[in-house]
Amino acid sequence: MYPSVNVSDIIDSDIPYRKEYYSSPSAPPQPPNTATFTGIRQLQTDPPPLTTSTASHSPLPWSTGLCDCCDDVTSCCLTCWCPCVTFGRIAEMVDRGSTSCGVSGALYTLILCVTGCSCMYSCFYRSKLRGQYFLEESPCTDCCIHCCCEECALCQEYRELKNHGFDMSIGWHGNEERKKRIAAMPPTAQGSMKR
Image (cartoon, rainbow, N blue to C red):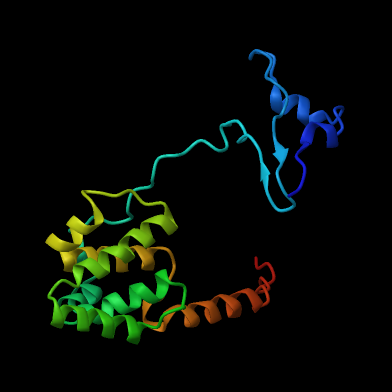
C-alpha cells in the first residue's frame, strides 16, 4: 500500500547520539540502522543495547517472614477468624482502589464456599503484590504458599502492606486522603531557643 522508506535516508547522519548508539570504542563497528517504515503507523527497529541501567536486579526480600504471624496479633486474629476481610483489604490495596474490600471479600467467600479453593484466587493477588513491590517469590511459588499456608500467606501480605505505610483499616481511598492531608499540612515552626 505504502512504499518502504529507509529510516537512515530520513534521519540526518550527524546526529551525535546515533554514532554512540551504534558503535563504541571497545566494540567492532555495527551496520547502519536497518529500520524501515512499512506503513504510516508501523516502525520496525532494532532493540536498544543493554546497559547497566536496564539490567535486571535481584528481587527484594519480604519485610517479614511467612510464619511471623504473631508479629501483628490483630491481623493474625482477623485472618484466622475472618480471612475474607483480610483478603478484601489486601485486594483493595493491590488493585489501588479499583475493587472494594467488600466485593473482593465476598467473592473470596463465594469461591471458598462453592469450590473450597479460594487459595487459587488469593495467590493471584500475592503475585500482583510481589510485582508491585518487586518482592522475591519465596519460600516457594505463590500458588503453593497459598494452597499450603493460606492464613500465613494472607498475614504476610497484610503485614507487608502495613510496612509500606498503608493503614489497612481505612482502605485505598482513605490512605490517599491521608496522604493529601499530610502533604497539605504546613510545616511546624520550631520554638525559640531557650537557655
